[in-house]
Image 1: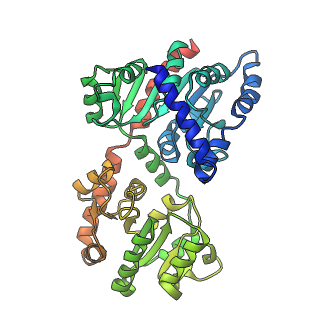
Image 2: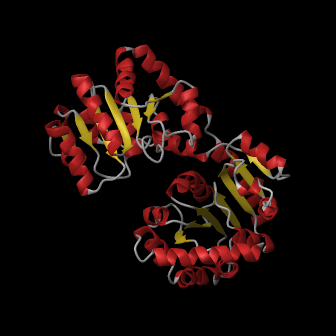
Image 3: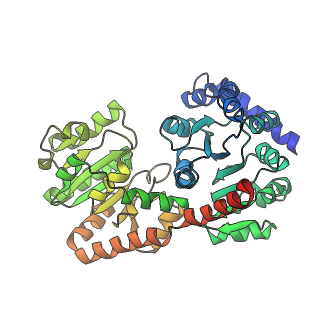
Length: 423
């Protein structure tokens, strides 16, 4: 089975190499790995040549979303074990390109493709004392090499579903790798039950570290003067990660609410073309954040965010949140808004996202199907402070009740480090 798996991995690599000729993401994926081992050697040969080399903790994330789940763990490791080296690897360019120079980790690299040769060479070069994989990442040659070298492995914020290959008739080989993982920290009881059914018992129900991540952001208030000036004294809806179908609905909401509501819109894509189209959609009453510092932006009704990385801070200035993507491939991050205690609205494509389903079940969120439903939902909050307060309280309470995963995971990591690595 390992031979078949490795052949499939090799074919996948060749496929991406061909696709890289005309696809930018595949090109970044492929060329980002060129001379990767040379770069790793340059770093870790020097580190390991030290008479008493610092222990290396290797954390792997697929992409940017998984990084947000792994980030609280990285931060706590650096805080509690400042003498350790944290190596962060990514599978995709969207994670690597966004975090290569901005992560709390000491070193950030792409993960070499999962062949047996690469796995052996990577483990030999890096010599990690502990490996942590985030959520869905199960690379079986790497897991096997870690197991053979007696290097402990933790999986954090994992979630399992019945349709995964672990639970199929042909899944025995994959299941065996799960049993070699020292601890699998799962998000929910359903995942633990599924694993128990296939005799995988090295499981802890810890919850999702993303709740700790958004709670941490909320407590790190970074004032945004222009946004505060725009918002003060007004009802504000913050629309995050929007796409054109979302923005068409927001334009209708803008018309329907007249002077009773202001909009802050942070589009998912901030290309010049899209920002220009969005600005034109709202006319003279819209201002870009990049121009707001030199203008009295309080007189405008729409503030368009034409920069990245600040949306999670902007939600604090609103009373209602709208999350984009629900009329496309799926909604974006709802927790960044919910943590501030506000009703969360989004389109119909949310079923794959457990937190969205649970927010609805807790009367903290509303799914809207069209512009009329969006207008009705927003006006119901504007007309009823009691309803707004009920949804807001439910939203913040939902996040608060689910924090704590990071501390539970770190307790296990600390126990391992104290009992095995230091003694």
